[in-house]
Amino acid sequence: MESRPTRRRFMEWFLGLGTGLLAVFYGGASALALWPPAPTSAKLQDMGPVSAFPTGKPTFAVYTAGGAQDGVFVVSQTSGPPTVFDFHCTHLQCAIQWSSGASEFFCPCHGSTFNIDGAVTGGPAPRPLHRHFAEVRNGHVWVGGLSS
Picture 1 (cartoon, rainbow, N blue to C red):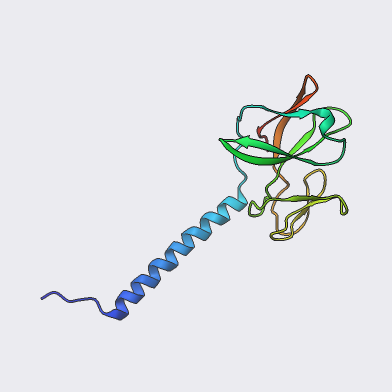
Picture 2: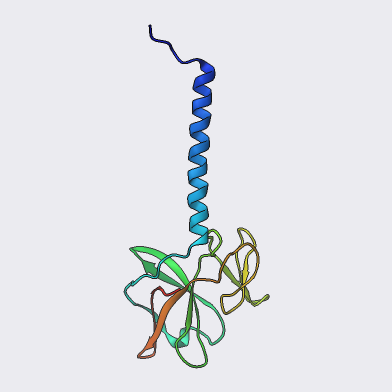
């Protein structure tokens, strides 16, 4: 004779499955937050003339990676190539913004802050902003994939 599961047994199984799925989801999200992405070898893109990026002032530029538009902050230096930061916070990948009044990058989602060199100055972010490969060719800024 075949016995049918009770309502109580079904609910225990269903809640156990739901709890297991949540644990896997949050475990995966935690792993993404703790380990940086691997450097990529994305094709270099022309961001425009060096004169479009004032020295020492982060300037937002649209960057296309993998067919999708993304963003970077270009910080021109007095000498050498500019520093280019990915515009995602290293905490949970929210889009960061530059505050000229506070002279820092900030994440509106959870309050992380970063100085102009990308170092964490406050908040839950576990590491500095990711950098993109950058060089200057013929007076134009060229940006590639993540370098750190």
